Amino acid sequence: MKRSVQSLANGLDILDILVEADHPLGVTELARKTDLDKSTVYRLLTTLANRSYIIQEVETRRYLPSLKIVSHGRKIINDIQLRSVAKTYLKRLTQSMGVSSDLAILAGVRVVYIDHEDSDASLNVQAEIGQVAPPHCTALGKALTIQYSPDEIKNLYKDYELRRFTSKTITDLDELVAHLETVKERGYAVDEEEFNVGVSRLAAPIYDHTNKVVAAVGISGPSIRITSGRILELAPSVVEAAREISLKIGQLP
Image (tube, rainbow, N blue to C red):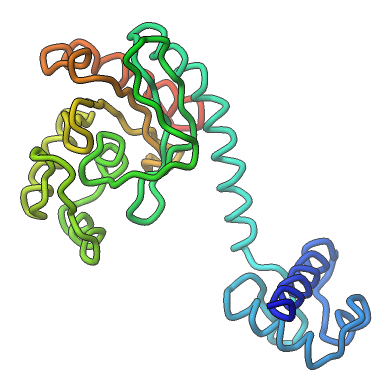
């Protein structure tokens, strides 16, 4: 284990050097800078290249960082920007509606909460930042997949069990695809006790500058407070919050 950790540390050292360098570097130079033998450096470079973190120039055989690092960095920056922009709207939704509000992204086949605002109400739905939830039975998850075609939805769930959490959970893929078409038409998603008994949720998608869904904003609360009748009353505010966040992170009007 200690040797594996040291190998990881050496690999990260090489990556740091390549990122900070103003020109591609070869095995000999990297060996000198890291005080490692050439065979070790070459093995680490091969691993980094195989994972697409670095690329090798064809002519010089030297190495430089790939755009994968830039992509990861951009995503982190975007998530930080997204949370910063969305915070005002989460607070506004919570204060005006008396329910909790959430911000989430999709990671694989998991909804990941990246921000949450608690309500002061005695009955409150809490969520932790970093908490995950299934997309097929949550309003946030449905909103995050709102842009997917029926074929894309089926591909997303091909190796995923549509687990039943309550009697209202949709567990049939064709039924879910049809349901998501309705979600797409109205522009927001609802989860009335599909994930938790006694809890209802409402969410809308957030778009980036390419008009791609990158996150979702939603509210959650006891079903006695977010009733079927009140959903129609609450939906416009959630959709408007999502629209304003989208515009502030770059979506074209």
